[in-house]
Length: 219
Image 1 (spheres, rainbow, N blue to C red):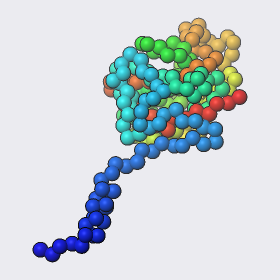
Image 2 (spheres, helix red, strand yellow; image 1 turned 60 degrees about the vertical axis):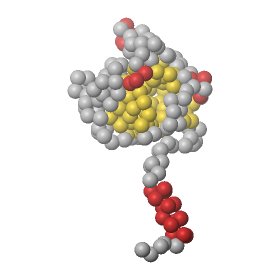
Image 3 (cartoon, rainbow, N blue to C red; image 1 turned 30 degrees about the vertical axis):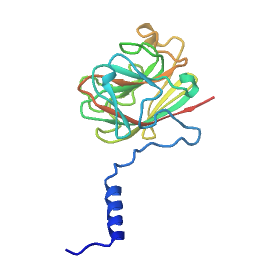
Image 4 (cartoon, one colour; image 1 turned 90 degrees about the horizontal axis):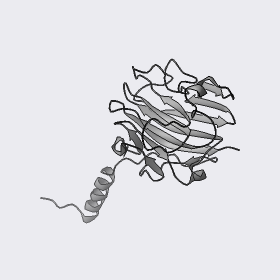
């Protein structure tokens, strides 16, 4: 049997080691005053409510899948209190899945958050007609602007009393809060002021992924 030169053996070892490495985690860097809230590897700065097992990290994304729970941002950026801001996240839904992104909310040990608004995440969840981009139960979207199993960008902007939700750079919902808003009667906590963000795990049958979670603080 003919022996390979030592240099070729070293080169072969290096090539095998390189090919066997896992694919790099895709995490967008902060730029143009955007600040990352999720490092793609840990939940540092985030706190989960009643069912911690409903959230985990997989391939650089936060996975929400399990019994009702909410993952609140409680980290140091702006002391986790935001008034006027832009928020962006890449989102992927699986078939018949529901989730949400809360803003101007506060940490709550259990239950659906009673403070703040929810930007709906739902492309094909059949029980709830409110689709992705809805400002939940305030300004609802009837047709899903995105598809399952494909990453899309959800962009939430709050400036003074106006909320704008964009999906893939297209505005799908805009709402300006008034002092006598009709929804205050049944949901007095659904009100603009200031607060943090929360990701929702809706139910065991729903699986939604979040990555590249970023915020830009506005004046």
